[in-house]
Image (tube, rainbow, N blue to C red; front, side, top):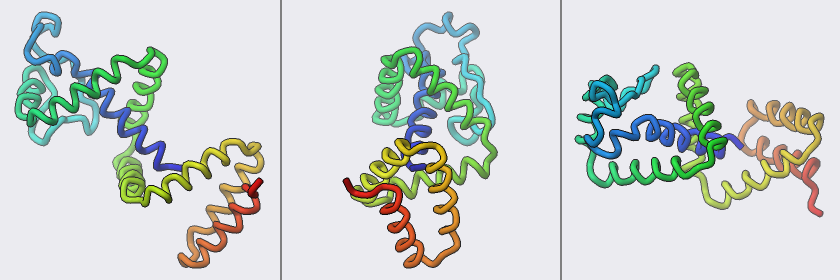
Length: 177
């Protein structure tokens, strides 16, 4: 449930950084379009591209030039994907990126841990969670709230009992047709 959100947030973060660094992706190119040669990128909290590199004027270009070619190509491709999105999806990504930037370091760390857990998860388990989340979204709001409460009560149980109760909750709210 959270993994999909975390994956989307991570991709959103990267897309937004790429959007903000559009001129840098094109190389040194059109310096006049960037004013005094800077990227126009305003680094918010936690936004330095690399330790020791500030996001002011030429430093972003310097950071870009130090990236391996394969990484630059990957970022460039992702930027093109972002540019191809409809404006409403780009706006949504920008809002999500801003929400991420506004998070406390603890919240970011929690989100990164969830993302790592999702990445390391079995593909079958991911599919099961996606399916469960899709079914969860189809439930009426009162049932969703009740499922959340019941799942929250499982947090302190030992793993075997937790899994057994999770299966019971699943069968109760998502019976097989």
